[in-house]
Image (cartoon, rainbow, N blue to C red; front, top):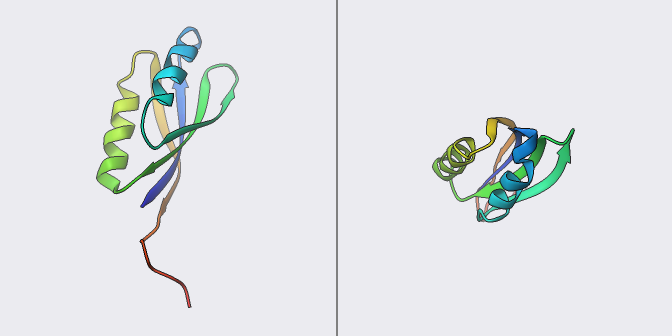
Length: 82
């Protein structure tokens, strides 16, 4: 499993539209909004390829200026630390 933190920069006038679209994407959760145009997102996906696909989808949304990766973590199912 891959967990990522993203900062999505939007046009201020498109903020609500982008938030609505983000809310409809499986594995994406809006954490907060900063300065009325930056959206802090936590994303969970099954693989790095899935993470990249969703990030590219978000980057292509109307009103999105950029998507910046702020945090990235890999977790393997069933693996424990001893």
